[in-house]
Length: 339
Figure 1 (cartoon, rainbow, N blue to C red):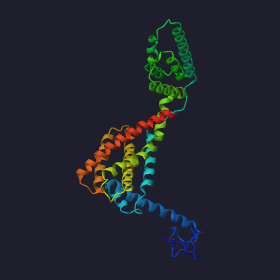
Figure 2 (cartoon, rainbow, N blue to C red; figure 1 turned 180 degrees about the vertical axis):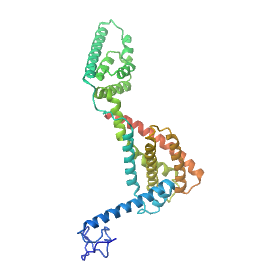
Figure 3 (spheres, rainbow, N blue to C red; figure 1 turned 135 degrees about the vertical axis):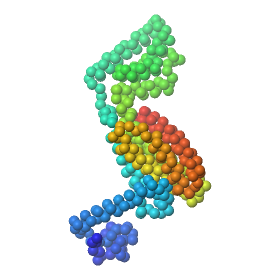
Figure 4 (cartoon, helix red, strand yellow; figure 1 turned 180 degrees about the horizontal axis):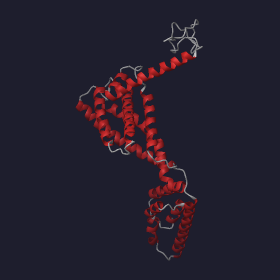
């Protein structure tokens, strides 16, 4: 393929250093004439595409069909031969979550409020609840009703029933007001009251769409959750192979990125295959396949026996599951508190 002519001036146009031959030894830019023809632009475009495609195809070939080999080769220093792990992970995870959102089938607008009729119904119900609270206070003040007779009617369980009935205009205030009509020993616990008040505040804000809002918030931040779990997975591997002085944490991180990338790619294929059949009953078999891949990948990357790789895989998966559960709980609490 025809190349551009070299410049007579040996000063690099990009960094200003001297260029001894064709490429600058300081920044790598080619010292050629900057006046490019349209043909040169097209040829460079196809060179870049074919070069990237060749790296991508080789990366995918190693990743899918040679468990652990991609990580081993990358750790050994063959960086230009393959696609950068983080770049591949970001692209794959983006495609996975985009496809998951498209195939979810739930296109309900989570922030669309109810109809005017429904809002009017809620206001009428709130008016009745406020009236009930005032009547309870009056009767308690006059001593005509024992506090214990109203305790069950104002409990957290009944509040949850009201949530299901969609009748909750300003309900957080009403619930707190009703609770204050009871003696301290008969009120819901502090934690229960705070949780219910927060739940009712969200219900007042989003109405019947509260569930959709929480789901949308969770799915929107789910990729960040996976990104946080990447270093944790690598940390588990670092602990299992803490006696290996030839490996640093970064090596385990590369293994973690490649493994998560493969999981996303298998997930993409699973969604595409399952889409025409409207079913994903085979996900359990895919999970078994991923675990087997993990065993073989650890075996080939860390050069250990199959039994040792199996034991390590079980330990890593168990630790990863526990860590994921803890992060999910904290993540859900944060969404619940700040939504």
